[in-house]
Image (tube, rainbow, N blue to C red; front, side):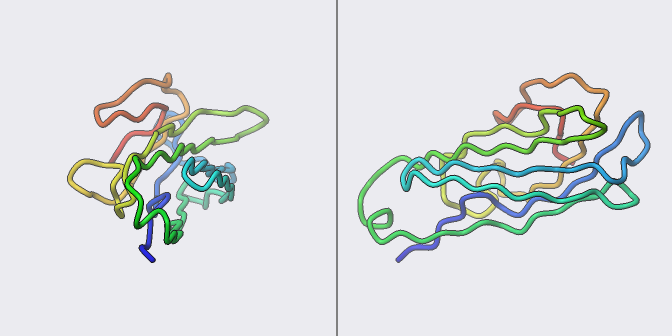
Length: 131
């Protein structure tokens, strides 16, 4: 059985006008099409606005044997004072660790609440940018 990384480890910080935002809720969600599996978890930002999530791995005997295109919908939503911000939206098409980013760099994000969500180089969308 092959190990498949559904969502690589991610860390980052939430800022508003350059200042850390403590106490924000960062919700992570994924939908793995191959297994029709979804999952969510959340983290609360610390005093410096920092958050982190461990990688999510799964295994699949059929997925390792049968050819298919991986499709994993990933999102990070930031919630502060009753308002939601689209931090990260991405469709991952590999099972590689750090396969979200060309060059296989760790997912380290800076999320600026004052920014307008936009599409970034690398194909992801939201207010977060790779550090």
